[in-house]
Every structure is written in C-alpha cells, then in structure tokens.
Image (tube, rainbow, N blue to C red; front, side, top):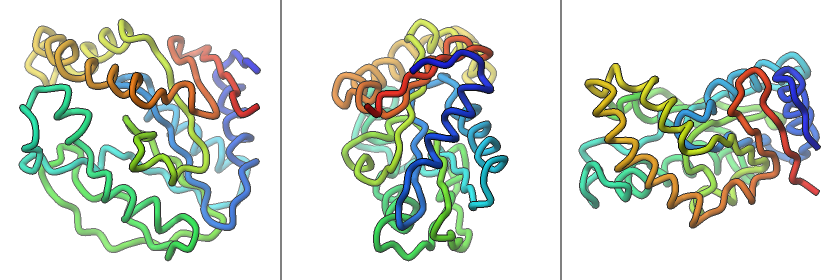
Length: 226
C-alpha cells in the first residue's frame, strides 16, 4: 500500500496504531536516521491520534533518555561507536518507560531522564498511564535488540544518506560551530554509526510501516505488515 499526501499518510498511520490491540498501553516506535523528520512526524501522529480517539496519547522523545555526556567513556568521543553504542541509556528507556507500559507493568513511567543536552539529570516524579494509552516515541536506534521486544508497532522514517547529510548540516550548523564542522561530524560520526545500525539490525526491513520522507509534503507510506 502506498499513500501520497501527508495528511493521508498521517491518517493511515493513526488508523494502523489504533488497530493494535493490547491489554496494556500500545507502544509505538518512530525510528529512523538523523534529520529524517522523526520528531515532526511523531508530533503530527500524536495530534492525528488525539483527533480520532479519547485514549490517552503519550508523546516522548527518546533524546531525553541519552546517557550523560560524562558517562560516555567506552569509545573515542567523536567515533561512530560512541554514537551508536554509548549515547543512549537503553536500560533506562526499557526500565523507566517501555517495561512499565508493557505486559505486567506498573503503568508508572517517566517521560524523560535527562535534559536535551544530556548534561543534567531530571528528577520528575513518575506519571501513571491509563491501560488503553498510546505511547508515541521518536528516536534513533529504537529497534536495537535491547529495546525491540518492547515495541508493539514500529514505524521507520526513511531518507537516503545524502539527504541526512544535507538536512543535518542545515539543521545543526548553528550549534556545531559552522557548516564545515557539522559536515565533518556527520561524515565521520553520525552517518557511519547509522550505517552500522542499518546493516546490523535492518530496521527498515523489520518495521511494520515505512515512511519515505524525502518529500515532507508528499511522503509515501509502505505497509509491510502483510
């Protein structure tokens, strides 16, 4: 199945989410590489869901579950290995967010553990989800083996690496001290780390739904559930 216009894609994604039946909150991963448009798509999907259902919709960014910068010591700072293997607190994602919302979970979850820069730990009290809630979480590397069993639906937002590079430079040059430094980081750290993820895990092939997001206004949705 392929759908063209963005509103149609969002409607189809929302319908697919609401078709998932679980005796616990439905946990939806919006996965993909850097600058693919995951956060925007997840925000819009959350709004589309709220327009269709009275169920609680929990919107979370996995970037708030990064490992503290000072704890990323296993690999060289600017290496692909540091980015792919050491940047996210996968145990925290599992134990504080996904498992509590899953089978036998307490429903008491935390929507964030760190500030966006991963410099300051957050100490907000846990929240309690309703049994029929829907979690929409966006981030990189969401289908890693540590996390994959805890998702009920996987959406992969797909763009080619030349577009990752172009968008990444445009988006991040302001805080990376210029376009040249942003390009260096993408070429030597982020893109190699994401290539490894695509090779090792094959998230595009394993996701139930794939959104080709090269054209923001006219993304294309492929339904791989069959």
